[in-house]
Amino acid sequence: MGRKDFFQWISVVATVVLGAMLRLHALDGQSYWRDESATRLMAYRSDLHLFEMQAPGENIPPPYFVIMNGWMKVFGTSDASLRMPSALCGIAAVVVMYLFGSRLARDPSTGFVIGSFAALLLATSRFHIAYSQEARPYSLAFLLGLISCHALATLLTTRRLLVQWLYFFATAAMFWTHPYTLFLFVAQCAFIGFCAAIGALRPTGIPLRRWATLMAAVVICISPWMNTANLLSHGGQAWMPKPDRREIIELFVGSTSSCVLFALLSICALIYAWKRKDTGPILGWLIAILPIAVPVLLSQGRHSLFIPRYGIVALIGLYISAAFGAALFGTIVGSAMILLLFFTAAPDLYSDFQAGVNLQHKADIRGTIQQIESLSAPGDAVWCPWDWVFMTVQDYLSDSHIPALQNPNQATKAALPPKTLWLILNRTSDSREFETTRAIKIVGKNPYRVEQLWMRDGTVLAKLARDPPTTSQPGDDARSSHGGD
Image 1 (tube, rainbow, N blue to C red):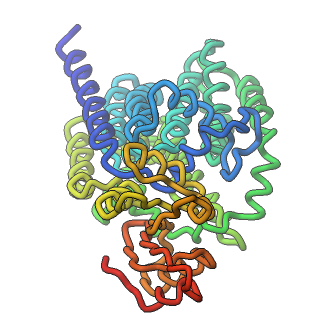
Image 2 (cartoon, rainbow, N blue to C red):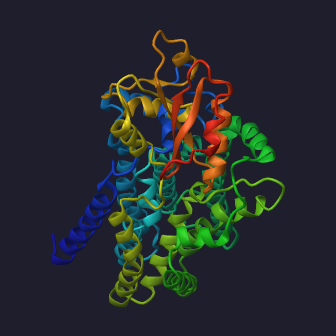
Image 3 (cartoon, rainbow, N blue to C red):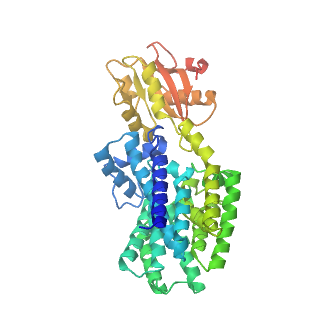
């Protein structure tokens, strides 16, 4: 191995190690939140079947939850354990990003430069790190999408049957992991169509007819879910806000200075494509734009269909385009530009790790349970009517003397009803009065009143005191009781 090869090998290994450190750091630093609790609940459903079109209560198919079911049976349900598959997929994605960038470049001499640039951008991506530390399918879908893109780039230069099968399985699997990866597949189809139109399909790769066969096979494989996808698109998701363009830009690109640099490098990528007759930057542009632009445009109608994490595969194209743009300036200047991008993102990454958050402040269910344990007395119970979160509450109370109830009748029918119930709710506003009124309504006719209320990150905790048997209207006293934060 020559000195140059040794340096390249060391730089790639260092990038992967950096990506691994960022994704494994404080993996259990934050509590499970609502969506992760849904994963925890869904993965243990006895009625979940692999070939259902849609997991109950979810807008994605079941395979991810089936995988998580097997994982939890072997490795347990701790915070770090449930997030580890996503972290491992995120680390693997850094490796595949390097391979994809290296393969996509038409000029082998610049393959290492483009691959390493793209891998470094992904390794330090705040957005990708966040969803590599969350027990949801986004990191797995991203990895499968990246493998699909790498197989596509390989098929531009080889006709090996094994690679054709890899492309088919990776592309179908990414869709059955999260259906919004369909827009990545659309970008790939548009790229092959563009190359065919300008006569840029390489003679060493598979011919256009074989491309058409492969893509038709993928469409047939994913078609059973399309009716469900169509119903979801017409019904929308009630909880989805209209896409915020500023939020999308900040999440995918970062600060204003990062936006300027990415815009410059993306334009330079097109110059690279024109000067070197390389179609790689075109694929990058298509992947960066279509998975975001198409669902955002569809969301301008009656129903919103898109939130930024659904378009995470667009990072593939964004970083590939930036890598091609940096490569236009040569290794030294290009490396300086990529490092400048890293340093513009570093303050936000540092602040996240300092605050112990993962891109966002998640509902602190674990902290709420710890507060209950510090304030409760023997005989108390926890009431969590929040279906998705109840199993998570049970997990966090597993080493405690406090029982968890999903229905207050379990308390009122007990031989010795608890004097205090601790009610855990999803926080829906910043108004103490609103949350207190909501808690009173939920308590309803049960013989408890809201004695004190705390508003925490993503949760509301109410201390419910049992009324004496002579109390007339449960909850009347609560209207004048506003406990401390």
